[in-house]
Length: 228
Ligand SMILES: Nc1nc2c(ncn2[C@@H]2O[C@H](COP(=O)(O)OP(=O)(O)OP(=O)(O)O)[C@@H](O)[C@H]2O)c(=O)[nH]1
Ligand SMILES: [Mg+2]
Image 1 (tube, rainbow, N blue to C red):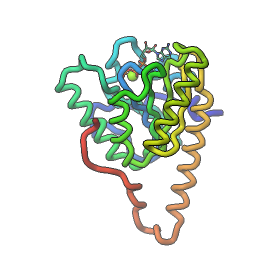
Image 2: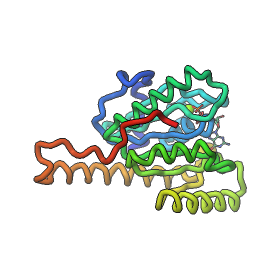
Image 3: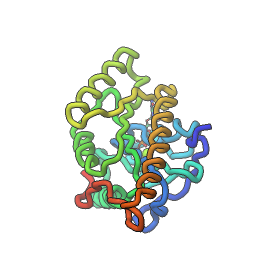
Image 4: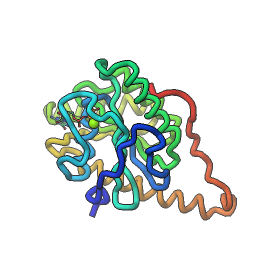
């Protein structure tokens, strides 16, 4: 059975002090406001209202942590790019998001959602560039692909894969729909595989003689800068 089916809500953090301990592999879900992040988490967990989804952009205002059994977590973050959010609120979210990414050594993967009809906006590109130094694996989900024909969704997937290959090297890109369950099982399998690999990699680091009694290196994580 998938660990995603054991998902349960853990905590909603409005400040870094409320983050759970950085003690198990985490998958962070990011993307523009209203792109379908919370819906994607529900689809992966095969639940209706685990994460709160809404027609109103800017619904997720805190960082919401969900436990996947006791082995891992998935993390729902506030979206970017919604102009109607007051500047002061946006600045608070950006600080919170930056604190999350620069502080989480256990971050294994980032799931970046982009609307299949409008992928790779300027803000998506800025987010991708900003995330890069954290060294996590990247899975791109092209959300709401039910709004496109199968051929158009396939073409979008190919175009995004090509664009990212030029900029980032290989990236996983899946045409996704939370409402039609497209790409959900594939995304779940890939994320589970990455979680499994991260546990093995961690085990190797910890058992290597040179690493004994030392903290593992910080995986090249950047520490500076606010989220874009
Ligand atoms: N057609 C379609 N609609 C979707 C899909 N995924 C999400 N939606 C709709 O898009 C809207 C936003 O979904 P959310 O999951 O709340 O989006 P979000 O990215 O979490 O939004 P914020 O928390 O505001 O940043 C809701 O009305 C969802 O029902 C999808 O795969 N297909
Ligand atoms: Mg949300």
